[in-house]
Image (cartoon, rainbow, N blue to C red; front, side, top):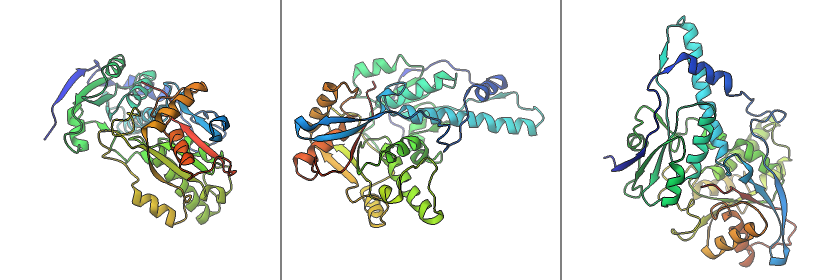
Length: 363
């Protein structure tokens, strides 16, 4: 049964697209090798030291995703969505040639995504850049009104529903966004979402040679991509003697790297993009993390850690004091580090390199 939903806005877009428009997609959306470090499809974001010795937390390294076009890491998967539509156009080019130009008009493919703001903003920005079909955004009824008003400024269709009422299926999500013939990017894995959405970010992180990587754990797939590429590179190296060409560190450094993901303890946390109303399509669960450890594919501290609200507040304040653009959700990795130091599970002066991923500051 489909949940009740309210249509906030629907942006006019042609129901049929000309072949000329498809050709424009092919001409304007650039093509890169997926794994060529000499010609990256995404420019590396900075990482830099942050000295918190005076606060008792030592010197940490910050990977800063706030420099991306809309201010968050979500710009990376939004770019991959544009690539999907370029590949769609390429498939029709091949078909058109085989049919001797018989195709004249094509139905536009539309993307749906569940969002609390940042995913939707990044996706709308990326698709608008190339004149691609506007995305369809599904948001929860309790989304802050000011955030909803910012979303309304986007070139996007917007739908509001109570997302806590039922365990949504991909079919329900598409139906609620008037997109039954479209694609729900939130649930679909056939596009290798756990592999390609943050593939360049994963290798940038690995190449810092950090011992511990602290990352927010929400409905996004940053953590999942890190774990996927860690395992894939280890297995590929062991089987073939070489890993992905983007990996520039020794195998032993990669194997021993721990991925610590921060999850707010309070469901009403100010880090409101992390305790999502539901996470129906999370790829890695605690049993998966335990299996990765037992197989020696990840570090001994890899896991999901509940973080108390006072540490999320403190971490957000620290980033702000040091001029780092972050929202509370983006600062959750730092919050976890602070909590582990205070609980003496981590020592700030043990010589281990700690990398904090700031996922940025968006809507």
